[in-house]
Image (cartoon, rainbow, N blue to C red; front, side, top):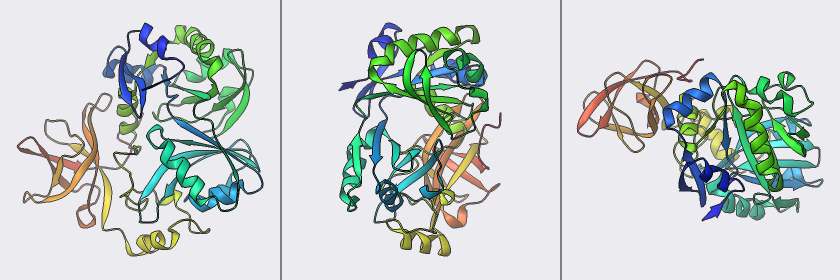
Length: 360
């Protein structure tokens, strides 16, 4: 079991630690609901240093990225980030990721912790143009500082104007006394804020300074459990739940990051799927009865016939109702359409809704 650089800090705070993607990670400190609301109303700091980072450099860097990802990375400019995914050759997704363009020959790819080895091998396999790839996952730490007070609270730690940073942009600057920190206006919560990348040697220093700067604003450390409920209220896909090697970006409503103005792995098949329409679709639903939907639960029609399965579900702390994502056969998908979620032995009525669930 690997330890992140801040493991001792989490244990000192009596965090509940659990194995996650090969790392010993804090799943909660005070409790999911308290931590969730802290991020929605104030701000919280997540240690997500288990995520993977690959640096791709050289004059062939963009060529490799364009080949293995669905979005059009040629649209990136320096200081801009892009959400994308890597398709496999059979219609599914190897991983979803964020690409940061440092300059025309230098890109940082941030991938899911559980997929670091798989993604590295996939990139290496398709690197026929000999771009330079470096795995920096063990060298970097990552904090997500999220919530409506994030800009105001963190401004004292850097000279750059955080309020002027637009969504999915980033800057490299001094932060909390550390040099060359990537300050990224990205996040996975829907409540605004930043993701901060830095060398492991600065981890304890930055952690302490972030908590000090946020103290007057109500900052608290937040675990992975609340990260999951926050992302689900926004309807954001989680790899391993809502997308995986068997789900296509078209089925998963990721057509907006699938650009057919370039060639990429399995582009022809995905284009055909988009034109003909997928056989199933990812839907969002809210329960109309009592219960909590969970991953793997059956989705039924009014006759009790199984038409799909739940991929993510929870009792949403802010929305205060049972919500979920899942795949159903296309003919049953549609906003306002009623479905039923099999919870234990009961079929609980639910209605399909537009995302996000939380509209704060």
